[in-house]
Length: 62
Image 1 (tube, rainbow, N blue to C red):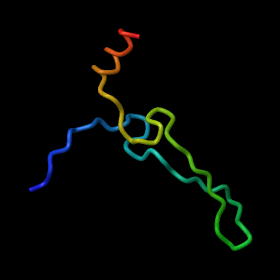
Image 2 (cartoon, rainbow, N blue to C red):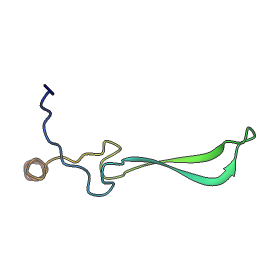
Image 3 (cartoon, one colour):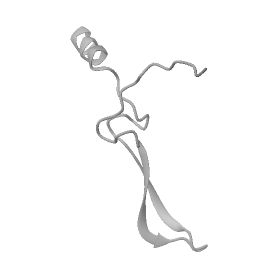
Image 4 (cartoon, rainbow, N blue to C red):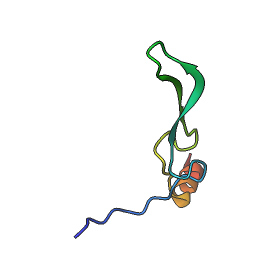
């Protein structure tokens, strides 16, 4: 039986794909492509966001 994992909301900016690699069109000497690693700026590469109730509660306290 699978273990229960709490349901964490997926980031609305990256839809759960927090890290992508984009090609520049250039190639290295060995023929492989030059890639840029891009991380979602909202979730910082986790793919998940915090619950809105927790985020708003922390903002009120701070």
